[in-house]
Image (tube, rainbow, N blue to C red; front, side, top):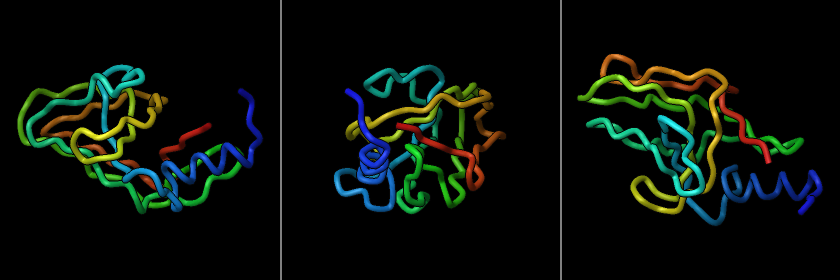
Length: 126
């Protein structure tokens, strides 16, 4: 199904952006492609999803980009892992998996390696 840019922007705004009506917005870290169900989420002790509800601007040109820093994601125990994807969920634990984005460059995450995303570092494209 093809959509116009306006509809793509509306979908991004409604599900993840500043006008999200349907879900809360929590970001997760994944060690491989989450597929359609959010698989491969990091499982280190002390790790939790980050509430990114206020981290977004308004979608434009089919893309939604963070306008506030995201993180830090941290862990209190466990060996470092390589994060290849980020995911978006309706809840801080469980919930509905919304979508994922593959990172341009994998990052190391662990006890001594917290993860932060600077303003403009995360973009979701429809």
